[in-house]
Length: 463
Image (cartoon, rainbow, N blue to C red; front, side, top):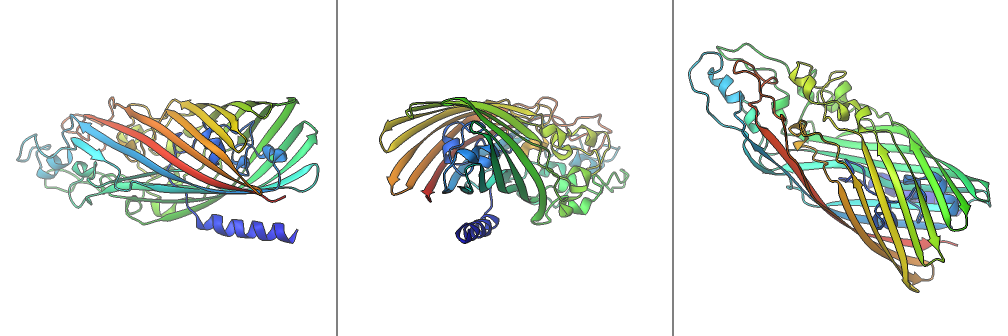
């Protein structure tokens, strides 16, 4: 018992020091742990390592006494293109819109923008699982649930700002879960499990002065705005932190030998507000973890072949800062307000398929694929230049190599081909007399993303 306590203490210390990065199904990871990642992210009915609580807490009843630790090298390529824009901000500043001098031409937001100023991210994961007795099992898992990261060297929103906009712009959201878990065998073929989710978030934004303006004071134009309930808490406030507590409950059954079915449910996790960004996120800085749930089946044939499939649902639309569209901003609702504008994301349904084949005594090969319709509507691409979570297809592969003496090496690879969302009515364009936010000069914003991930993990069997 002393050894177990010391392992858990070391685990928590390491976990809280680590930080996750960007993800793929919207801003959730496609899978958790190298084994799941190599099989398209399946896991509801197929616990393979001590990261199982991230998908289904009940799965730990099928695990031995083990420790898994790994890291993913994540290389996204993201960016945007704006065309057909005639920025209104310089026109207002010169007085052209309201009868002053000048003409209806000037700097615009048109151009191609590369969000890859930061090109690499590293996502750690770690899990420990142990049977307490024949019926009860314990585990603790640490994993990056996901996040968003962009850094544009050339600010896509510079043309919407009168002056003083920094050259670069971007956001960085990170989510870390620590999940102590208990699971009980209800019968020899049924298990129920629950995880306490201790959630940590970190966020920062920079270069978004165009959305924090107090107005346009000129001789011809009245002051319009402010555009936020807290214009001094929209951008460039440095890192902010948020904590929350939630849970996940799961069920696993083996109706007949080799066949398992399972599922889990995680309600929306309420997080402490990002106080430094109370003027950016709806609800004065609220950024909760969305409700998600799913189920799956798996079949093992003679320890030579494993097949599994999952369906997962992520309800982004129920988190106002994520699901509310930009339209309220155009209608005069301020950033940061209750019911204020957000990123306009839809809910996602993801379909996952995985297979594993024992090709030789020490080597198991894994393959997988997943698909989910990306969550960003084509009229919401302007604000989502900051968060182009538009990946739909994931192709995965990997291997497990038995090293002997209770050790195993797991490798995973993910390729997500580039996907582009082409904007349609994506940049507000009112009449010539309209000022932002009703009019940002029209045109369209296209956003794109592609990804590759290489993962490595070490398994240590502690029996």
